[in-house]
Image 1 (cartoon, helix red, strand yellow):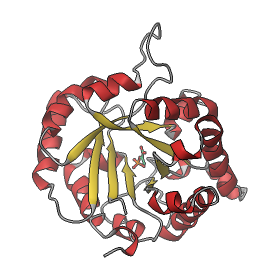
Image 2 (image 1 turned 90 degrees about the vertical axis):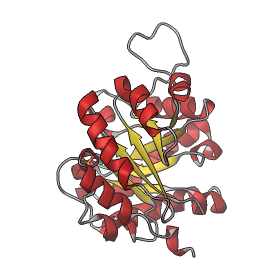
Image 3 (image 1 turned 180 degrees about the vertical axis):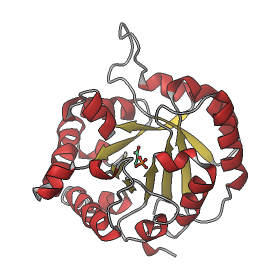
Length: 257
Ligand code: PEP
């Protein structure tokens, strides 16, 4: 069974000085206790300096985005091989802010997912419904469609080499959190979709919850049977909150000993 996983997504925040203080505090608190991996996804310009700070620690590096292309005339883009080269282990793919603000379609997200796998990165596929979609009762079908785009483009085997983050759009950065039961229901659905292709891969898959996870709601969310950790935005910018969230995830994955 893989460990739980907590990923901090700094989004477009921070500078060299604030990053250093934040990292110093976060790293000072890291222990090997519990079944947990911690990753941090800073903005592109800070990947190298954060990588240097993370060297010889048990916190790993991730990126927030990548290009679907391998190299060439794509001004402003960053390739999967560059992310590998700088030391990334994870890369977020299809975050709702990229889908909503930068027009990323399910197809583009699927191409990015495949590009990450090709270079040995672990893509974290973000899926989730808007408030209107939840109210319309189509949460599961929205999430299935988002996953199916990757399965069609890359195949089920590649999808299961990644991580899935269920992030209801209405809960991201809003202070609204899905209840543990609401989140669990969608996580169970996601695992079921994978299980219809490959039962063992479904058991092995890490499915994270994201959407206003805070120190005071993390434990209840992470204790759900199909929630294997979290993708943390705002609260990852505050060392004490992020540390508390990480500690809440230092529990045995899905009841293993
Ligand atoms: C995110 O950016 O993926 C996220 C979940 O943000 P927040 O924790 O701020 O809702």
